[in-house]
Length: 140
Image 1 (cartoon, rainbow, N blue to C red):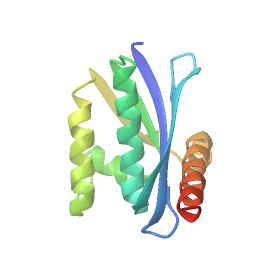
Image 2 (cartoon, rainbow, N blue to C red):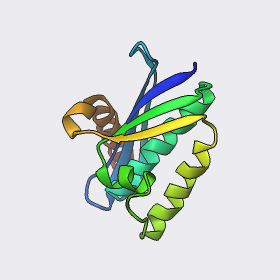
Image 3 (cartoon, rainbow, N blue to C red):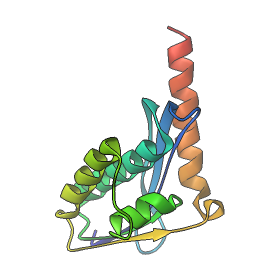
Image 4 (cartoon, rainbow, N blue to C red):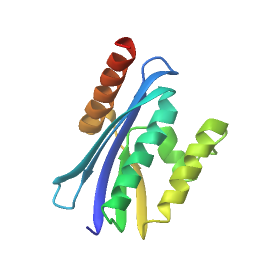
């Protein structure tokens, strides 16, 4: 698979609070080739946004993607990855570095900020992860 289109979302209930990530990976025919839904434990919204992208880029690497177009509803993360904003938070800096290192797996990568309304599937998967993770913690 040469090109993959990725939609990611991360969220935290609280901030920090119980957090989860969601991602949908499509081929160029807009067919879903993979989905990600992972509970993170306690994190901030911005940490979850970065983690969602990290999980998605790792999956794209396993699928053999050479080019990825990433769509996120986090303007902060997109602007940081485009080097328009500095990464001042040390926790985000380490996640930024993880993304930066994953970029070397691809010949081409782009990041685009989209409105939340255009990111419903990734949002659903992130909320699903938060719901399942919270249930597991309460049932211990």
